[in-house]
Image 1 (cartoon, rainbow, N blue to C red):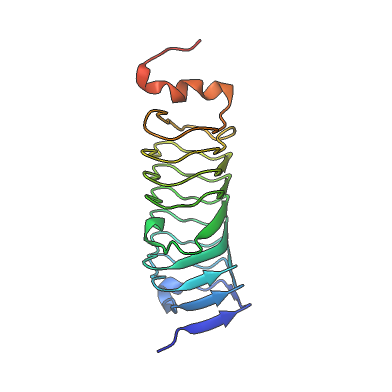
Image 2 (tube, rainbow, N blue to C red; image 1 turned 180 degrees about the horizontal axis):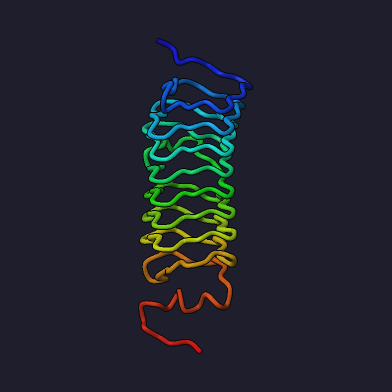
Length: 190
């Protein structure tokens, strides 16, 4: 059975947690003020789609393709992005709540996180080269074996990064973030 193809469709104020989410291919579609809580996106393909003001907490992304997808003002708590397909993986996030998400082992260079809450997120083993964490809260977020080459943390807050455990060459930080980079040494900077 071939997956359903949706092109240039606009989905508004639909509660997919009640109606069920139809797996398929979504090309240039917009989802606005929809509820997907706990929905299974598994084996679906999203290309050049936009999600605005959606509740996507705990959605399942097993073998899902996210190609040039934009998420704006979405609640995305507990999502395991590590389960997405690698081929063509590219997305951006603006004013989203991504707490407790996992990007473990994913290659997502040049991703834009703008004004997002990324509390207790796992970026272990991920390639975050040239990623921009513009005005993001990274409280409790894990960076371990993470490639942060040329990543921008200049306006990010509440992160702790161990330069010995992560590749930070060319990464940008503000001067007031120096204590976050030296936290494990117990150094007091005045």
